[in-house]
Length: 61
Image (cartoon, rainbow, N blue to C red; front, side, top):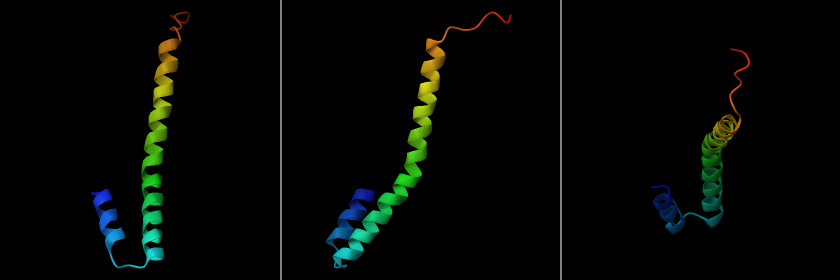
């Protein structure tokens, strides 16, 4: 839907500068929304890999 909205935006009679402004605003907004999700996923993956590679410490039993 976002791609379709951009196609309609760029085919509209709006001035090119305004189209570019809306496109950059949309890009910034999606970056703010998706970047933390991506970074937390990478962080959790690294923790899982670290825990899988590290043998359990049984000395405290």
